[in-house]
Length: 410
Image 1: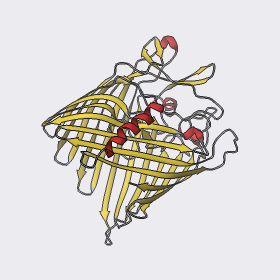
Image 2: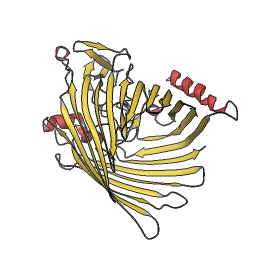
Image 3: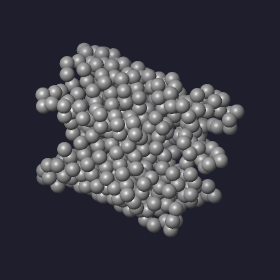
Image 4: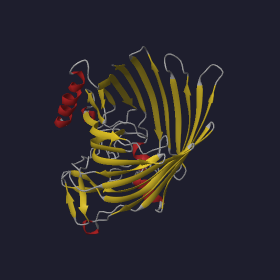
């Protein structure tokens, strides 16, 4: 964590070295608070209150580009949430149809609202938003060649950025209360585990736009960031990340007021049979729709509908792989389009395969002035355990949450 803080301070300070320079900067500081419904367990943290800060610096001069963005959080009630992350810290060059970048990058390979089977490269901070957890920057060297209405990009990833998994003290942990998480390990070949962060990983992505349709295809050979295998060791439970070959893509089509979205991928894992570490090969498919309209007063309404399914594995395996293994989402977003930028969003997720498994979210945000904003959210999770071993969303049953955030932008 110390090197991340040093990098943010060093590069962030460059934005203020003189009045006539090509650096642009913005940022956010916020007070955050969250409260969970009481689970009657003294070993878990049911509340949090702390501070959040984000710095965003951009550079552009001639053919050269750079970006620096990162965030930090300190929570006086729940120290397990203390966290600092570099989201982007890269230097790049662009000329005509060529673009190169080197450094920490945050890639967005998704088209849908809540289910993201194709968005695989970046690790996540899972002690954040359940459907859209905070992303962490990955050390990437990329080279893009544009052609047509898109291009092809080659990615080399020499470093594995470990996801931040909350331990059993967090109400958002998928590890049972009282169980300690040890530092992760990853598989370099079918017989060797290591904690060395460096290794060979690569990816290739093709994107194109045809009229009102955008599509992409990708292939990745990398260490998995999404679905670790857990093994029992002397000091607790250790997450182990296997090497995986991912094939997938996205498709988005605007049809007037209707937007259709598709994401899909197939995951082919390298199994460690001798170490008794296996993750099932499987596919994931998400389909979504948005339909929007304008009210007479100038406000906008949007209906949301999405579905996701994990395929080519059994029902029990699906539940173990992800909390959203065969689910549907319906929702509504209302934007007032006024001077305060008021917006209200409601979403409801239901499992089609496991009875009585629901997740609901209600979020409201608005500006208080040019530099101040407030956001409030309410979440409920109703997923009673229906077996001897809770899996998927059942681990978070009744982790209902109220969260408030007051932000100042600069």
